[in-house]
Amino acid sequence: MKPGKQLSKARSAYRSATDHIATGLAILATILVVAPLVTIFFYLIYKGASSLNLAFFTQIPKPEGEEGGGMANSIIGSGVLLGIASVLGIPIGIGGGIYLAEFGRGTRLANAIRFTADVLNGVPSIVMGIAAYSLVVVPMHHFSAFAGGVALGIMMIPTVTRTTEEMLLMVPHSIREAALGLGVPNWRSVLEITLKTASPGVITGCMLAFARVAGETAPLIFTALGNQFWSVNLNREIAALPLQIYIYALSPYDDQHRLAWAGALVLIALIVLAVSLVRYVASRGILKGAS
Amino acid sequence: MLTCALSIFAIVALIAMELAMQSQLSWHKSGLPFFYKFNIDPDTKLPLFWDPVNGSFYALPFLYGTLVTSLIALVIAVPLAIGLAIFLTEMCPRVLRGPLSFFTELLAAIPSVVYGLWAVFVLVPLLREHVNPAFMAIFNNPTMVKLFGWTHLVGDDGLFGGVNLGLGLMAAGVILSIMILPIIASLTREVMSAVPNSQREAALALGATRWEMIRIAVLRNARIGIVGSIILGLGRALGETMAVAMVIGNSAEIHRSLLSTGHSMASVIANEFSEATSDMHRSALIEIGLALFLVTILVNACARLLVWAVTRGAPAQVH
Image (tube, rainbow over all chains, first blue to last red; front, side):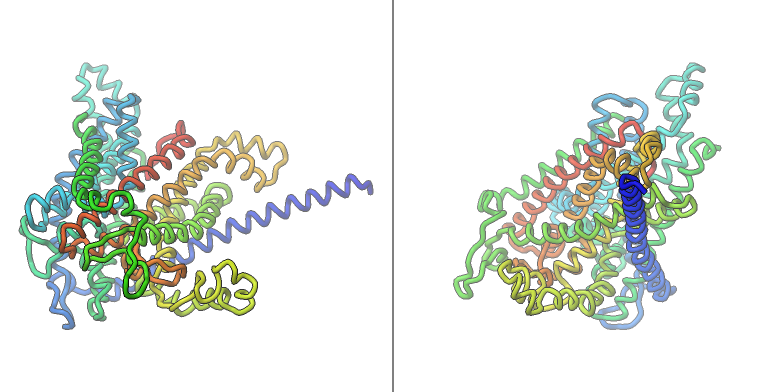
């Protein structure tokens, strides 16, 4: 055998060896990532499911150290906070998304807004909390459910804007052209044709934003503050599920730990529901989603 | 509609303005040295950074805590995330691809406080009982100390010296890495799938093996976007609050050891803000918040520009 051929044989053995090693490393990385994450996920579900009972949904917290009790007031509180946040965040977010996708498409202003929305998405939630604190709590001189709702609402705006835009972009041009060709004014075509066609996507996008802020704790610590008792007064401190999980996780009582796990399960269920709905709508295609 | 869209600018401006106004008190007292100076305790001769009782506030330990935990998170998460992304885009059987990417999306959306809960009850005991003792055995054994003692990274005052509480910078870094992994992996995957198939085919047609194809055609074309997604993960790690606040141990000190307790910029705000009694204390915390805001804006802007540079032209994807 010629030396050149031998060299090329060694070279090709080397190349195929690196190929195998790289493949192996990639698979190893995948296993190293997926295995612990699956474990964490199912551990959370297992712990939550074994702690959940009816009292969790119907009773308010017992005094420290006593057995039993639930998180009913936190669930209602979270509902109130998310209601305020949705009223504030969803209309503005959808409006912004419509502008980006329909009226401002391709303009420099729209690009700048899209960029700012993405950047705003990455701003830590605790900073949003401080902003809501100085905007609402300082002028009002006390903590309130309203302040917490404002903090969460501000956080929803960029997410809703971006998902609405993405959903509207999936609507085919022919539909817009058909509407315009029939002499429908542009604003009407946008609201009644394009937005309606994309509505399943837009709604699930809002749900995703809703589920995300439902788990936010940091902006609530010094706006909604938390509450051990029943309260739906917008002007007073209010309990919230993630806030209560945070407090119970650091408490010394086993029974409160149990409630924390159960609360975590509720939040995870919300997330799973929202993420799978979004994926379902997106994979089905926007057109089939319109009735 | 335009008003709605413009409100996003307004929000950013409003946040910046409010934070700047509320932090003026602290800014006027300390100025820029707020971020690097400290006092010396006259009794113990130890540096004193954060002293609400006497009303003197310097933020150095929080910068340190944030930097160290984010670095630990990146060191653990980046290689794994890139490996996962390569597997998902280039090697994965079609059957697995859907569930795996669904799962990463799910994990990216799980609330911070839930990760914190898990970390308090599972991760911290795990680190305390198994992982940290292993590292301590490696870093603190006499041969290592003899060989590398001059670096001050091994031994009792080294990276793994001191008391092993489980809580601390190490725990915070590990939980952060778990939280930013899905983000980096899914963005890297997106950037890598934006590389046109013709590039891959060209490399394969020249006789490249699969790894060579990935290296020449995919990684080289997507490298800017991958850096962007890493920076985006960094941005998330810098601002992550609840999970860190629950496991970092909450002490405003600086130690070399990764096992020591600390505080990050976000965690100190979460811990002390609602209990801050003096205006000065609150103002100092808001100044930390302002710094965090500016840094994350900067980091995120860089990252977005880099990711856009690669995915521009690729079809829009739903996250």
